[in-house]
Amino acid sequence: MGGSWRSELQSSTRNVRMPLRLDLLALFVLITPTGLSACSPATTEDEAPPQNAQYADATDVAPDGFSLHLFDNSTTFSQVLAMNARGAVIGTREVIDQSKTVLSSKHFYSEGEKTIDIPLLKGYTNLEVQALSDDGKAAGFASRGIGHPQGSLTAIVWDQATGVLTNLGHAPGDNASHAQDISADGTRITGYSTGANPPRMRPCVWTWNPETRHWDAQVLSTIYDNNPYLLTSRAIVCPNGQRVAACITVGFLPGGGVDSSLFVWEFDDGKWIRQPVCDEQMRLRDMTNDGVMAGAISAPAVPKPCRVGLDGKVVQIDLLDGDVSGEAWGVNAAGTVVGFSDDPRGPIGGPQAFIWRDGKTRPLPLFKDSKYSAAYTINELGEVGGLVDVTFPARPSANNTAPTEAAEPLIKTLGFRWSPTAKPN
Image 1 (cartoon, one colour):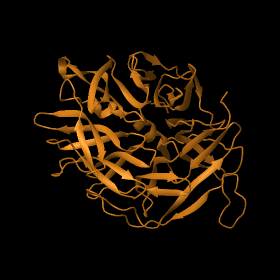
Image 2 (cartoon, one colour):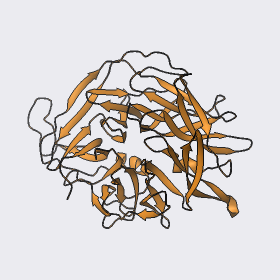
Image 3 (cartoon, one colour):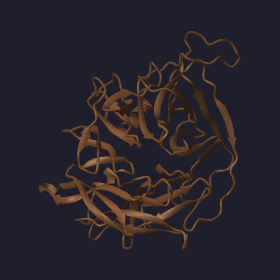
Image 4 (cartoon, helix red, strand yellow):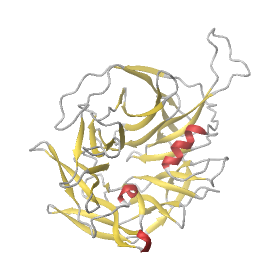
């Protein structure tokens, strides 16, 4: 496959099925009925999860040196996007309608025996969740058709404990918002708020107010009001909620271009204090309490994985042998970085999940014959989440006879949670 960004990765994995054999054991799939009840009202718009959802839940395999929990909850495609300190995950799974012709995407939350589809926000047609707190709150956005009179995009937070999905709203005077990250304790959410006349897009922090039981939106100080690079670069928050990082506009270029640089805001004595970090503009994915950030930088024309600290020093992470691009997506307090490294564009090969520690980049050990994979998140236990292609052995026919030589194995892309039981080679 090749390709660089996650959207391309996800799209291509749906169409290019590279085989992956599981030689270690036959997979055991556990079907778990999930009965869900209606939830109490939210402080704003809310919607309860669907009733009596049923789908395949998970499969555990245990190759040497690590354990792997596969989320076998789709007939075609699923992935883990974020994971918290408890090992709970959020992800997406592809579902097909009753006519077997239309595919759509659902977001799910899974912890232990509990697996739930996250509902749509009432009045909206799409949902994207991107971050997960340790207490099980998922942040992201809901969207609907462009030009909707009540707005097309709004930041949301969903709470697994209550099932309530809340519309976070936007900064006063704006008309849209997008949540992109959440603190470990679930009390601070970061993203951006945007408006028009004049055009503006500014980093925003939503803070939970326990007295009013409401999320208060606060715009962070910027040099210019319009910071369009926030759309793809993200505004991220460290686990303890005391630092926010984002790339904001520092100048306008001939031809309408925008020059952006990396800044950090520190919360001190009730105020957010803005500080420059470096002149680079990068796609930010994760940050530790010490201010170590993981992401991707263009060098010169394709994304390359990197980490950067508060001192502004950018460390470019080596790609795997033969690869030309990649991204870092997660970093933990131990300094371990995960992401994916990708081949040149073309029909052969594909992205591969990597783990970087002690200055060395290694493939994340998954299955020996894995053709493509990606790592999107890591927690403090060293557990990693992402996606990997899996080949299920050909199944017997309906009359229980053995599969014929012509029977083809079933190939799917599945979300995974990887847990180390020994240090990778």
